[in-house]
Image (cartoon, rainbow, N blue to C red; front, side, top):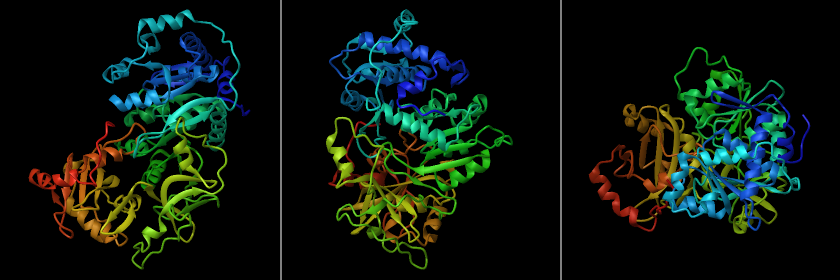
Length: 552
């Protein structure tokens, strides 16, 4: 595999290839066809663009071939793709588009009305609806056109990738042509991709997993890329078989949802060799590897790409993994390294507040290229020559990292500070829980109350008494960590990246869904009634109340 320096070179290297480049649901496209389609779209943008504005193209599409064609078009022409998250609405949607300086929008009929609902104002000629006759005619007129202009260079901007926005308004991470190419080569080596392999990416192409682990690696190795318009847990393995994918990408709850599909005696009969992603639970990693007879490579990482923590077969249950010596856990206030976690004889963490800090790279190099038009956030990440991740963790005496949530996911209960991620790990052991999410809701009169949301297969069969018994049996669950509110659901709010939407969960508090609560500490969990909700209503108008947001 020859390493190429830019995204443009990755695409151009396949321009004459008649091998399969894209597998989409029931259809296939060769690499040559892919480049032909990309060339026409690049020419169309050249006709419509304003040379005095940044060459930024907003894409609001499902995972259709058109999305991949536009990614190719931007790469070869030096334009910039802004993947617009289709879950945003109204003012927040406009804020994403305006912040990224999009001068052209590519939308489908599925999402085009969102722009009208948001009172989006742009020259209609610069809003391209992919199903319209005018769009198809314009592309047809450009068949065979040759591109002029300077070839993109490594440092030229290629992508603006918004962070997930799970805890605040998303930031636009800059990705240059060079970073895209380097990352693709790296992932292709890790996945050991060769001729005859294939890559399947189920997540939206505004997400870094599909862009870097999926698209970039398939281009670097010259193997086909597979996807479908929307992620379907029940169809994923069928897609993998149909295209012969040896490598699949994921993040968030993707593995969990595939595992929820009823087992089949032929599950292990598939071409998968390796699955690479992050944020899967230990149980999901083991279960997926065993059921589908493949290796699951899960590691901690972020869109910014500066810190990687890798899992290892020898690590303790619940651990995040290990990392190079420059990755440490620092107290964000003092800048000192946090002490290692201490446990009592029963396994209870004795120094959670002191041992928990922010994951920091003391010697950052490469990767993160800054946030677009957000120097303050970029500076916040790089302080005193270090890279501060914004994620919390603690370490044990053997150096294993344990994830503890985001830096704004501290809870304070009766004067004790602790991180949500520590409690999530414990609650995730409950047999009925596919996933456990922990977050703060207002207490009376001040401080936080612990609320947990459990995603379960069948809420009607949830045994709240068994859950209470489980909580009492967890020796490492601190008494102040015990949830006062528990929400049950089969499909809790998520972002398009399949991560849980904690902003929405906090905002909804106990107002939505099936909720159990404790009327006083030490009392059993009981169903939250309409009368109870009315009694609790004043807490949501106090100083600690969740703030309203337009994010869905």
